[in-house]
Each structure stands twice: as structure tokens, then as C-alpha cells.
Image (cartoon, rainbow, N blue to C red; front, side, top):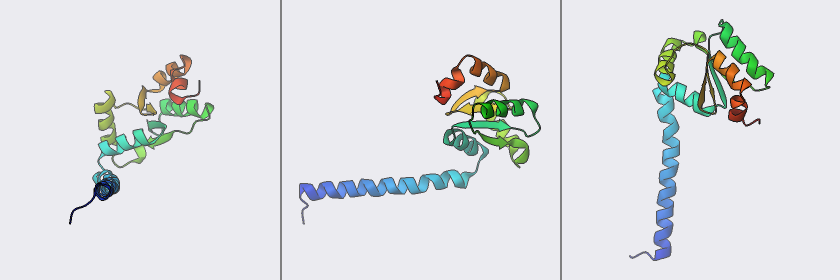
Length: 134
């Protein structure tokens, strides 16, 4: 039995749709299943508008959180001292940005830096550009 061109086209479209559906279903499971600190960091950075890797007792981290509070922005905060693998996450940050100090701030996937870098970014308008509030 030979398929007509319309039927062949439908079969191809259906096959592509099924493959895409399978990829979409399997991809999140791979990230969740790995639970590596590296996968966690990448997922957090690219799934949130603002991310602060912090320690709850750090005065520089509190200062950075305060900046976003004044801007009426709600960052996603990862308190490394409350994470069992916080030290591993800091190792990932070292590989990613070149230091393991806190805070480490990301806005829309871009690394802003620490608290002093955040202050500079506010003063020169870079933060507002990243946030899209200019």
C-alpha cells in the first residue's frame, strides 16, 4: 500500500510531534535525576529573573537583598549555609564565575557579581537595564 503525499506529510508531522513530546517529557527528568550541584546552579540561574547565592549571616548578602527590596524586586535566594551541599555549590560558582565568595548575583542569566558590583550596577544603570526597568 502506497501513501499519497498528503498522508506522508501527516505521518511525518505526527512522527515529529511524537519525538518532540518525548524530548519534552524526558529532558526535565534528566535534570531532576542528576541533582548535581552544577545542574542545580544552572537550573536556578536560568529559571529565575534574579538569583542571589547567599549565606544567611553574611552582611554583604543582606545588603544585596536590601537593594532588591528597595527596587521592589523579589530575588530567588539560595542560602548556602542552609543547603547540605552548599560547599559544593560554592565550588560550582568558583568554576562558573571565578570565586566562591557570597553573595553571587545573577540577573536574567547574567552574572552581576557581589554586593559591591551590585552597588556599581545600580549607580551606572546596568542593573536597571538588566531588569528592563529603564
